[in-house]
Amino acid sequence: MIEVRGLTKRYGEKTAVDGLTFSVKPGVVTGFLGPNGAGKSTTMRMVLGLDRPTAGTATIGGRPYADQPAPLHEVGALLEARAVHTSRSARNHLRALAATHGIRRSRVDEVIDLVGLADVARKRAGGFSLGMGQRLGIASALLGDPPTLILDEPVNGLDPEGIRWVRELLKGLAAEGRTVFVSSHLMSEMEDTAEHVIVVGRGRLIADTSIADLIRSASGSSVLVRSPEAQRLRGALAAPDVTVSSTEDSVLHVTGLTAAHIGDVARDLGVAVHELTPQQASLEEAFMTMTRDEVEYHAHTTTEGPATA
Ligand SMILES: Nc1ncnc2c1ncn2[C@@H]1O[C@H](COP(=O)(O)OP(=O)(O)OP(=O)(O)O)[C@@H](O)[C@H]1O
Image (tube, rainbow, N blue to C red; front, side):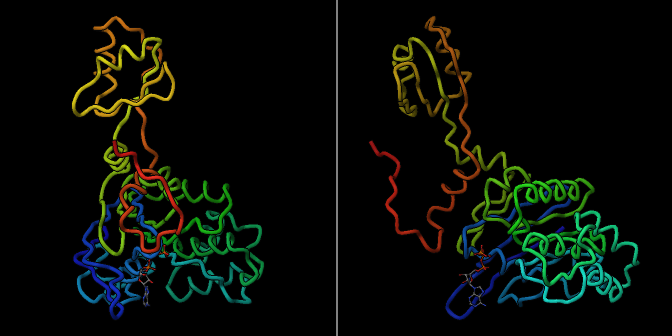
């Protein structure tokens, strides 16, 4: 369990992290989402004792990172992708790390197999591609078999196969009961990986919620209705809080009513319904809606705002 209470970091005038309070529970993958500059890396660095908070606390399993008796056995961390500048092979790099932390040598080969680096384990890690470097970073994080994992953008630089691999690995680690906290700005990636998300914008907490609730709350839950008598049905659905739009004669997009309610109205009218589909916003759309006002640097493009009638 990671617990963050009132965590704040100021760099001069700039408040990078602004009074964040949240908990990351074991057993599920928790995504840490936010636009660029939202304060994700700074938060993770403070949790890992690499930056000193201006105010507030962060603990892992009840203690600050600095007070962990055997950190590598308690917390595995992968921070921003950085090439390993070493002439050592991947295996020797991990062996050195294992030796300095009292980890048995056979664990090195276990993690090499786990991250799929067996074929290149004897190669110089300094010459690794970004994707291979990420796998080596994940291997280092797993070396001490820690109950808590903190990974900053772990899919950075990975190809689609690698992304799928990380996703399954993280879910598997969480299913074993570990606490898995993973940052990303790739919403679509988190949708398939995380069960819970903590969303930040400009250093502040925007949401601490399950993925399912996040989508539900931001989607405005519209329903697509296809009917040969759509326009007749449209008249019967009219109500103060209901919005109905139509892109073609036989199709209605209804917000403010459930699919079940629309189906009942159609039945009472004796109108045939050929399709009745609740439309879920993707996590990407939900995220854009939530963080619209929190993006640090807006792109200078003109976008069409929502129609205001
Ligand atoms: N050492 C520093 N000195 C001054 N400002 C900093 C420092 N580190 C981070 N910041 C600022 O704090 C804010 C949060 O940065 P941070 O890297 O934590 O965000 P992030 O959510 O991880 O973003 P990204 O997705 O781009 O990595 C940014 O505005 C950044 O410019």
